[in-house]
Length: 387
Image 1: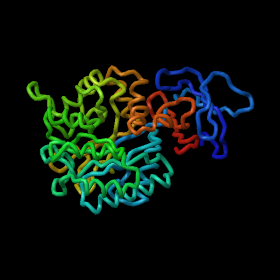
Image 2: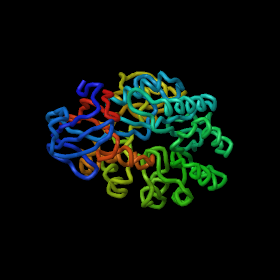
Image 3: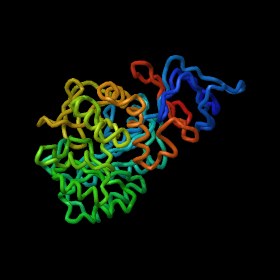
Image 4: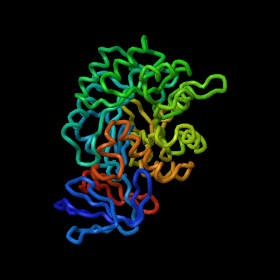
């Protein structure tokens, strides 16, 4: 342990401190009672200094879209599975995550939401659950991806209300195919509850997606994947998301879901403040190749790539520190920008940027300690070491 459990006031001295606008060299970060109270080169002699050597201090990463890890799935609907996912994420510099569902039986889905609601209130041992994400049930078969269409339903206010009630205040994101809605008022109904509407697993054309964004949808689920792509006479949902200056897009930076040149194109079009790097990790994350399940759908993992039996990509086995490293090295993004996409942008999306998401005075002391090859050496949440 780098940080003794009893220690509530200390300095972290790092070769590099990655803030939201600059990389600071040879600075110390003062942590008091779980908060960052100073970032400086001046050290008070009475405060213990924890020297991190040549390692770099990054903000704790936030994964906005994750299904599972180490054999456990959000859809298991059990406290034990959430604890396993939480502890596993902490090994990879993640201090907060949004538990994400997949299409399944209605009662199974509701139980998954109730389970997340309990963990949201109680807290977890590793990375903290920051919200629940409905990615399922209300999608188009044309871009179903790893979703079982036999469970697809029409989105009604009654069904949304049941999901919302099961979440008990932790529902943060809601994905849907906008072309299937009987009225765009449904998007307003959801956003009025404080829930972010995301466009995904949709065959919406440019006009339909643009209308949904105009009515309150705020972004796109794993851009390019699970949606109508770009044709020079039909920009599709992807084109609408890329051209809307306010839309935030999720991006899986594993080099498999998107070619590096496409990742760079998204970066150039959206800018660093409208991209959230996600893992979309499934239960196979952290385990060997083999056969697994994503919700109720069988998947096969070969060479770390997860696919359905029909060949569609089925999430990933990516980790956040690897995703940040790949996006930084494969695009024109700076280290600060790539880091913000995995920390500050997600925090802003969740309306929690005043508390978390960057290394700044007044914020929670959430850190990922990385070495030069982006390997995680320690993870700190609210001043306490969780890995």
